[in-house]
Image (cartoon, rainbow, N blue to C red; front, top):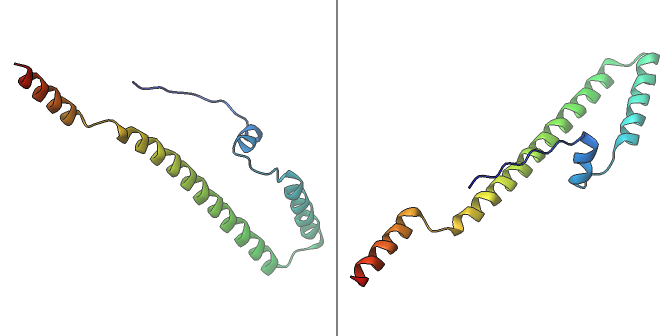
Length: 101
């Protein structure tokens, strides 16, 4: 049997589903500060540092998401291991049928 479930969630609903904190106020603050700094004239070294931080943080988030999905999928495959393999079940049926004859 195969069961498929489609879930239509907004990013906000997905964040709440996983119990992640709402970082919107922090993101807004950071964007405002960067905007002010750019308007003043940002040092190229500062810009490179910010860019590096954003990219590395994004990669770490992506890796965490992949690990989450991997653990969910591996847990699902482990729950399927409780069923006996088809050959074993078939063999036990053949042996029980031959002992009854």
